[in-house]
Image 1 (cartoon, rainbow, N blue to C red):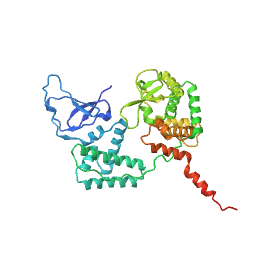
Image 2: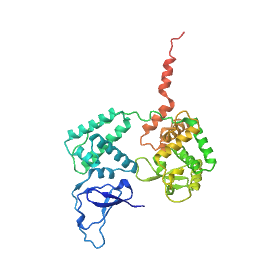
Image 3: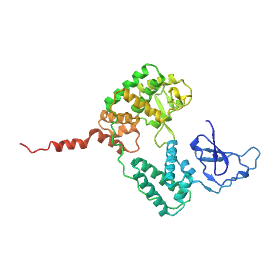
Image 4: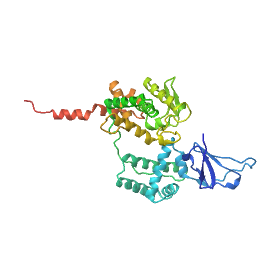
Length: 367
């Protein structure tokens, strides 16, 4: 794994880590004169590395850095990145550029003062007309920071700010069955020409639809996660830290195999950028995946822009049709944490409210 370097501004020492977001200090006030050299930060662990021949003196710990602990608490890289953005948003609200200073301000006063900050942050975002899900995520990060602070002994209270009520999965239909078939036809036509981009995009839409993968799950795949002989993928699911094997169908195996032949069987990310301006091939970005799906939607002649998650929606709805509404069985495909979520898909599929409205519209006096 390549090693990156970043400056630990709390101790003046170099911190080496597996990736840029792992460069967070957990302990501050370390004494560089105690014979320690660099620190290795790995999976939230700070490990002092002594130079050869140095005495085994312990590092001096002066305190706990809450911001670093909050990032170390994240189970996945995606969660960690979201927390970085959420704390940055809090800093903009408070007028503080230093994320650590923002969290110190929250936990450094009384519970009432902390709740006042949280309520003001919430009101500011509502006034900015941000989406409820965005507001709730940011508030959840703030509440999580206080919980981490309590776990570390920095406070003995919790935030009482409430999240907004939001209606999730308002449109669970996606492009629908015909829309999916049109997207698939467009992807197959592009792949038939043998272009790497066409072959890659066909594999992407098959994974999004035929196995119901989320965008981030597709992007995280490495070549080592693919076992075509056993027809399975090792996927890091939502909120998970470890990979789990998922079976894929024959057409998806064929699509992924075609893309692997085009990308060459070199280790690394499964989905690579193929556009001419990409330079050295690197992992496909979230924005590029969105563009690929939207491009296929346009080629398919869809009236509304196609979305990657919409393909997962379409697959879920279609499976409910094919299984006669067996939400428990379909949940094994979607891997939702709650059965209630799949039930929402089923309710929307049947449009029970619309059926009842039709009944009222037909309710006329006899004669």
